[in-house]
Length: 165
Image (cartoon, rainbow, N blue to C red; front, side, top):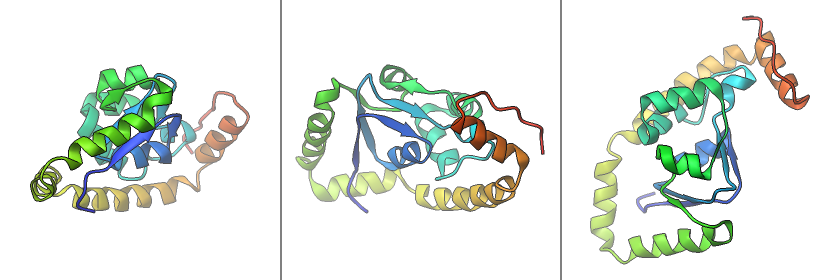
């Protein structure tokens, strides 16, 4: 896709949902939204190219913190750390996302598309490479007792007890 994408995040963007939000060019959200890269909490390596897209937005240190801990952040925290671009009232998220898309569309299409291409140069290749590595690691980790424990603990709403196996 050559056109910029604006994501409207009104609720939870957890795991795969966060991965999807990260591939957009811009994210508009509200205080009530929740964001979490909860993969490590479930006992496996993050996917969806998040090892590339998340640090690209929030920096290496903040990405490591979010990935290692799986902690949830609300819309205000997401705005503070650079995970999202605009914070509005929940009822205005879609309207503002569309307005941003219209603002972008008011610029010359050839210029916007070429600028986007330059800004994202190599990003798709890096994401494909990261996805391949992430999937290879996940396949191994899906067979572990820690993965089973992480999923069970999440389902039972308790803290996991990982055994390194």
